[in-house]
Image 1 (cartoon, rainbow, N blue to C red):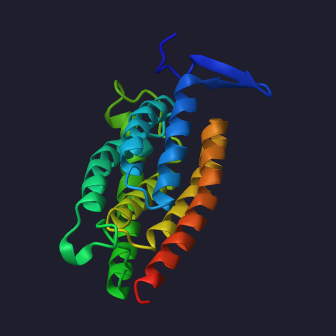
Image 2 (image 1 turned 30 degrees about the vertical axis):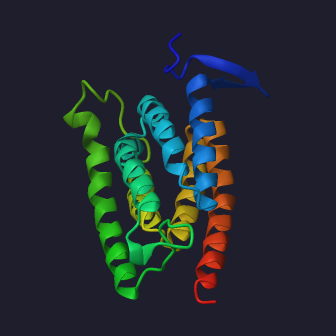
Length: 218
């Protein structure tokens, strides 16, 4: 079978059939997030491979909001690499890369209100997608509102990550916890395990970035 077919099996372990697609999407995703937590600019480059594989994976398991999210991620991976690598002079750290900062209270409120509104709109869109475009989407969206919430929050967290906002990691922790549950229900077990590991990486990222931020004032 084709490499990008989720039914093309790479190996079997403990009774679970692992596809090439799920395996390599998981590996590249794990590496990219770990490098982000380490504040390594190459996380954005590895992320490009991950989003292409994830796009195909989510299409095949009917998580359409997550699928569309990968298009956004592809673009933001390019932007993120540029922002981190070539910051403005007043935003550069000692390595001449973008330095870590925090959100203001006003920014928190704006993101919260916008996030809820966009979740409702996207959830409604995803819920009806198979009726509006039956040729392209033959099956209904799985968990349209839950999937839309993680999609919207991922977008917000990505913009925060591009600007190296510490709070991005707290948003990722919430998204990763919900995604672990959602992917386990869709029986992509390795991807569910990956997002479970992401929870710990997000916690580490918050700790590591906070430590780095505090050193700026010393």
